[in-house]
Length: 119
Image (cartoon, rainbow, N blue to C red; front, side, top):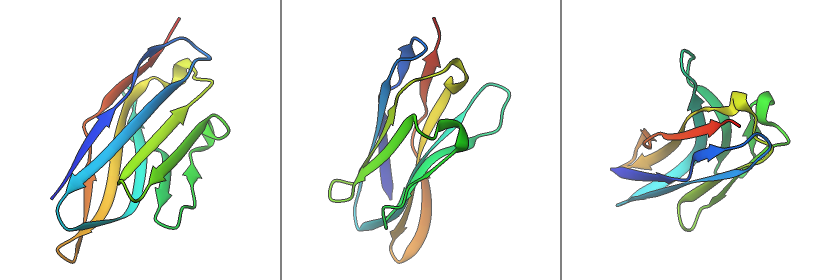
């Protein structure tokens, strides 16, 4: 079992920045993929950014050049640095971790954190 703790989020003005973090803990697990998703009211959950174990990042077109995803594999943590935030970035953001536990792949979701971009 893997537990995810998400921190960050909040209210920021357009053009501002926020930083989200996701920390994974548990026993006997190996992470092979991490990512951030978001869900705005009335919309489906969408991928924001992902970073598998090879370190190759992937971003939604809407956030390219503004958001940066990074991970510390030794500490099982992941960061999403969000710059030049826009009102359309307002959503609940979720951390997603894919890991092997007891030789079986599982997907884990962290609790959502609200990001609101408004003046």
